[in-house]
Picture 1 (cartoon, chains in turn brown, yellow, green, red):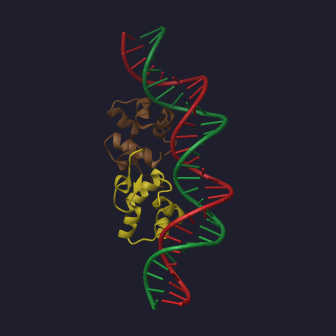
Picture 2: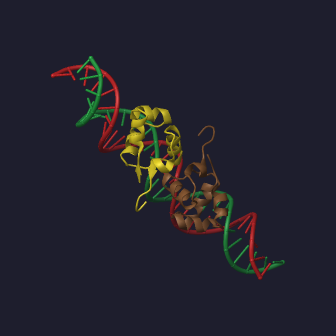
Picture 3: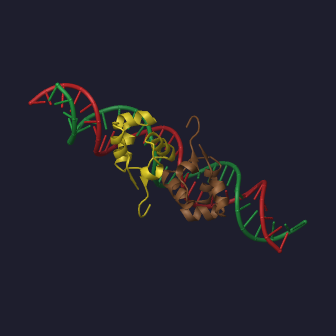
Length: 66
Length: 66
DNA sequence: ACAAAAAGTAAATTTAACTTTACATATTGT
DNA sequence: ACAATATGTAAAGTTAAATTTACTTTTTGT
């Protein structure tokens, strides 16, 4: 499972802390998600896709073995 | 958080057990998700939207307070 | 170069997703 | 009505998501 959060964050000029605050999670959670340490809940995924005006499918990409 | 899994399942003529097997979770998980007892992981949400040929956004709907 | 801001990391804990087993109720076909 | 299939539910347990605190490293601005 890959994700494009770092890129979207750059497009929207947000720091990890900014993003964390906007969607109501800890900064470390954003960092961990970007680094692929875990996959966020559907709730978070939806909030992220909404904020970035994209889709969950574009933000989170299924890979072989998922 | 609402979801339209029951409807999609009907469209595709699948039982809860059928769907559970197809995406690799227990039947009770499907039932619990349909009943709104919990929100599935992003991984499951993506598998469901793929199987039903729709989007996570259409399958899972954010509500007030989410 | 220096300071400040941003990002990375990690251990310990809490909360939520998901499983298993097991049984109860509802629906459908004959 | 009866049997089979499908759905609902619940308790107990496991796994994964997310938090908190706290510290280190990297990046950016002046």
